[in-house]
Image (cartoon, rainbow, N blue to C red; front, side, top):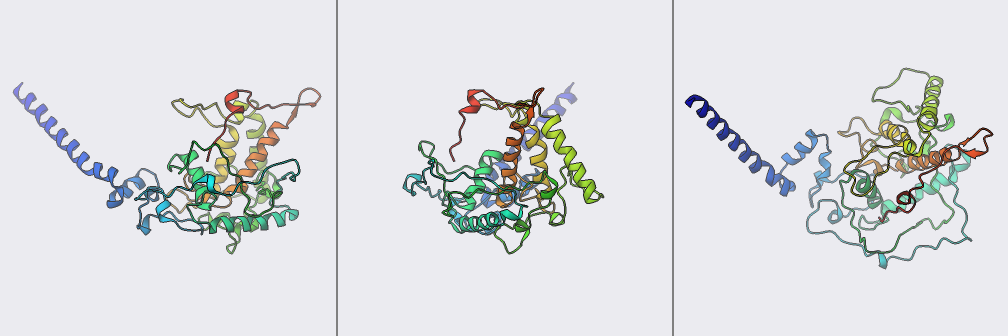
Length: 350
């Protein structure tokens, strides 16, 4: 009996020492990660990018961007506070009236879209040249996705402001970002303008094996397939039909389940996001990077300019799904969006 008590006492002493050591080591790391290199090692071991910790004056921790202005004091996690841009002091956005032209997105692979791709390259160059503290900058636009998709970055915002900002640095009210139509055979290659290393649309953190003329693989699972281009096209088309038609007869299946404030966890994404959208992110990202940056990771994907033509195509697929004719005579839409007011009246303030 005495031996059992001694064993239990020894175990408790060891457990207390282990807990004390853990608190002694990890608490300083959590409170002041910039002074401890081990914190980045822990992040890497857990699958998170060690670049998520960013410190003022620490060049090693500044996550790489494809060009653009620099503003070390405005980076996530930087010390000394953050400069806040007063959105009310910025020029008023152009009003959207009936006299403005209808903005029409065009496929990036179409020869008639060359002018739009040139404008897109110029627009990206302009926003990359803005200081990072400017809410229109490439840095801030990328972090909007990081904030709302990964939750890893606190967007410097003024939630009380009743304004929304819509800018076009191009001065072209009719311009619309072209879409990368990876769902049709003609568009299944990465647009060449996005692969041009001399272009502002290029990003070095992409899978080098997937540059043109390689066809996108909508069934990509980190391994290359040994198939012809025609076989890849047919595989992609079958996947498109499955995810757009067979698996998505209802809005809750296409869009995903409703997710409201106060819900304990995300109830599940829809077919286009969960498969098609995510697969293209995975296929584009650089597998040699720790988390397959840029496109292959939530926090960094919007740092690649291809993010935007990719997402405009996802928007286009939504419209295709909505306009898919059905019924016995094919004279009415088969698919409808949610009618829930929480969906119809929702908005985001960036």
